[in-house]
Image (cartoon, rainbow, N blue to C red; front, side, top):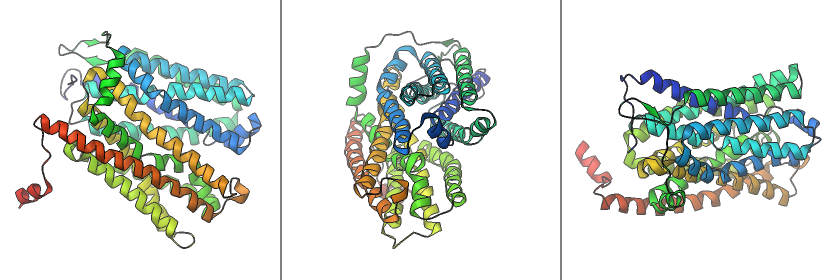
Length: 439
């Protein structure tokens, strides 16, 4: 089990400083990840790109992010969070610097590849820091809080970055963003440490584990696979909605105004602020019921999408807000996968296991985003001029097979994980027994 620092110790201030530096790096990574979300029109003009070309920026970035998760995990187990996170921040800064200076769309796409590769290093690194420094009972809540604080990066990209771009120009805005990333990388290297020792000294990881065997052992454990399919199943619907298809569906499909569509997305963010701590507390309090929380989130998302799709015509606004809340729950729900990862993997392979698990959600997200687009094209509704509510409803049906694959695999791995736990003498209490004891 990883060593932990307890509240009230002499390392409390150091603990918060290290975690705070990691969270700042994560916020900056989210700003970089979403930096084109509010400046799409300007990007289209600068790179002379149509809508489908701009979509490549997002899809390719997600693909690189997902593909890098396992290599990043292996590097984390070899070098620790400090160096991996620092290099990730500097790679992202390099990508934004290229974005700032080039007017060529092909070079800009290559810059987004750099951005995705650097971004891939940040969240697994902060998860490893949390696992090493925080007590087991506190870690689920800290993970949820980290995720919530990171989402403030979306606000920064939508408001201050867009304002800076409009007040100056493209090179100034993106060179500034690259500079912030570089400074965050320097701060990360100066402050973040990999793990504490019982003596209170701060050390870095120096062991040379067999990385290939670490990957094999991580994937071989059904608990890692349970975490992978939990992460695969929960966030993809929200990502597809928030990253690409939400605004077109709300405005062109449902006929909402831009202001009302923005209100739906604001509600989406606010619900996350409420649900995150609640889900984290539930995960910490009921560690043997985590898969049920994941299944509840998936069921809510699928049920609300079914209602919206089957509703004659446009669903009423309260149903759309309920859908936004269910989709938002996918973020906090996906964090439970990392609680499962930490519970079933020793510290020496935690980075590898986290990389495997983190790739699941982004793999599902890319599949959903691409197949929704393909479904729109097949119906002859592939451009804003041809969007229709009926086409959107049919296109969003592609999410249900993805949920089905994820849930079936999750249930299979849950059964196998419980068998391993039972062999170790850990038995899940039956619902009937719990009710009887409460009576």
